[in-house]
Amino acid sequence: SRRVFAKRLFALSDLCSRKHVFLGFHRNTRARILFGSDPMSNLATPEAGASVVLATCSDDDRHPPGCAIDGTPGTCWVTTGMFPQELVVRLGKQTPVSRVKTLTTKVKGLALEYSEGPQPDGFKPVFEVTLPDKGGDLQTETHQFTAKASFIKLRVASGYDDFASVHSIEVFS
Image (cartoon, rainbow, N blue to C red; front, side, top):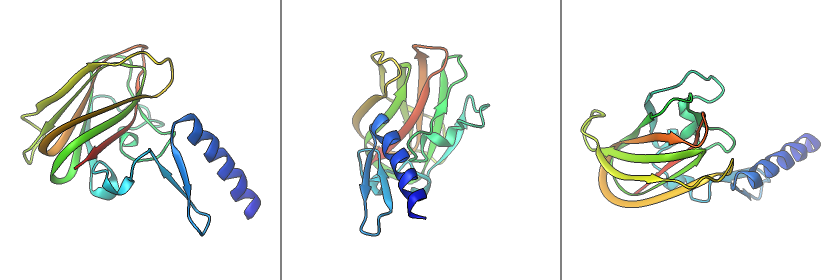
């Protein structure tokens, strides 16, 4: 019913404003959620053929590794409290990559690597940074580089708390 839809839309709008997510509307009043970028150009989504092939911790059914690439606001992959933790994403195919954007919380040390081959090995470093502590707010990190990648490895080297979270990994050509 319209009342139920209005309540859900209000709750979604509130969630989006707290998670720095934009909510757009279509003429048929269905909502479309964007992480501040066009989801069609993000290569690290299940719709683009991407999948998580390795996660060093995946014990929490409420926060599985796939949440890092599902494009859903409010979901995330959560580390177990021991560091480092790694997440390897297989892109749909080997593709040119020019930019990677991550949304995290409580992450202190963050590194990204890529692999060109058909198997997730021979990773090459892209960046390793120390992120500022933003309390529980989202940490946004964007890096530009040029490569052909089949796999992306995100390494959470350390955290500001026992648990850190990865809300989104976005890869663009």
